[in-house]
Amino acid sequence: MTFMTVNLKQLAAEYAVDNFVNDGMTVGLGTGSTAYYAIVRVGELVKRGFKLKCVATSVQTERIAKECGITVVDIDDVDSIDVTIDGADEVDPNMQLIKGLGGALLREKIVAASSREEVIIIDDSKLVDALGTMSPLPVEVLMFGHRKTKKALEKQGCTAVLRIKDGRTFVTDGGNYIYDCRFERIDNPFFIESRINVIPGVVDNGLFLNVATAVVISSADGSVRMM
Ligand code: 5RP
Image (cartoon, rainbow, N blue to C red; front, side, top):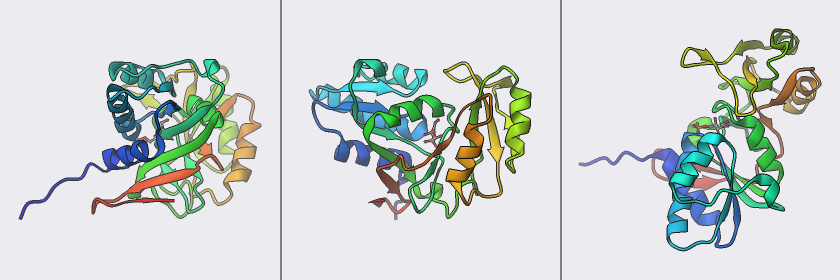
């Protein structure tokens, strides 16, 4: 008997591109290891002759998109985005999300806000009953006074850890730091978001509430379903 290993990220990504992207659209390209496969699939559509304009959610995504032959435009040069396809770190039963472990939450949120549809691509390991139970909540903060910002974040009931990558403090595309905030669970994400966003020094947080319009979920048996 032979077993095929299913690439769950690729499965969800290709399903989303094949079902949500049409010729002539303006498409938002997400960031991360799942979004990578969506970018590659969009590149295949371009090679087949689709006329697409794409907006990137990070410097990394812009580079990959260009390597795939995709035309990348500035978000300020489009009126709106037809559909954005992006990954997530957690998805709850109400399609509320935590994003930002890949470090691109700020641009991802700006792109999502200009998108008619925000399609999230995940495998079923990212499904949670309550946000914060698996993933920390990434919060992007200004470098200025960031230790004061950390203290204010921790007053909200979390442990905030400055993100380090490859032995250095991680700096976002916007030139900011990220604190990964570990809560036991986030039962009221709207309340937590409102508390976090009024802390001076906070640029944005990884709660994406009422942002997703569809979630594409792949499973190890090779099936794909939608929320
Ligand atoms: C980047 C993100 C990513 O979408 C999220 O971290 C999921 O990434 P991956 O698909 O690699 O698990 O929010 O800022």
